[in-house]
Length: 223
Image 1 (tube, rainbow, N blue to C red):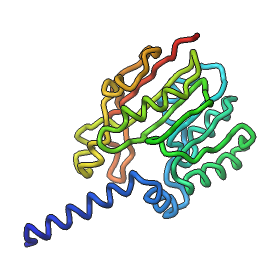
Image 2 (cartoon, rainbow, N blue to C red):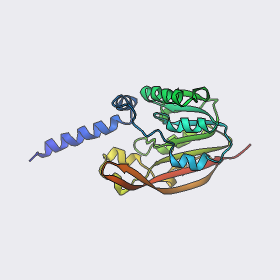
Image 3 (cartoon, rainbow, N blue to C red):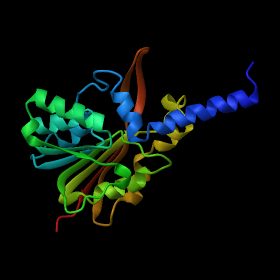
Image 4 (cartoon, rainbow, N blue to C red):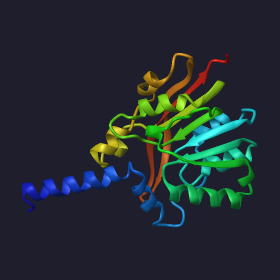
């Protein structure tokens, strides 16, 4: 039987490995490990929120391999895909080329935790399953909101801390959030449109698993 010190070392190593997944190098390594990590299909909450909107400009932060970027571009949007992983952005650019939408897509390597929109603004700013450590998604939400044009929409979707994720590391569980917990990150000129937990079926090797998405959709006041 492993002693307490050995258990402590294992726990520390697990937390170190989990912490690496909040950094660009960890995701570069992860994307380099296989040809396609995600399904390439648009996230359902994005389709529900943007499916009936008139196309404009969009920013997808934490775009990964570009599934949502490609879907938006196919709907007629001009999209900027942003991610802190150079390998993820390279893959996303290839997928946009393969989909024939590269002329409607730009790329931006940036960390959401230090994101600064500057003079840029977009009709739709979206982020799916981007999880900052230690409750950092409130600050990320505040930063993303600065990129929303007057009258535009902000959509932030993530994993809710449900029982399905109890096997994950403590740092990963702390990074999850309920939709209402993001509300303090909204500036005063934003009105929440949707603040809810939405059931979602996850595909696992052992079969489908029921979990919940946290969904925050908010609109910035038109000036």
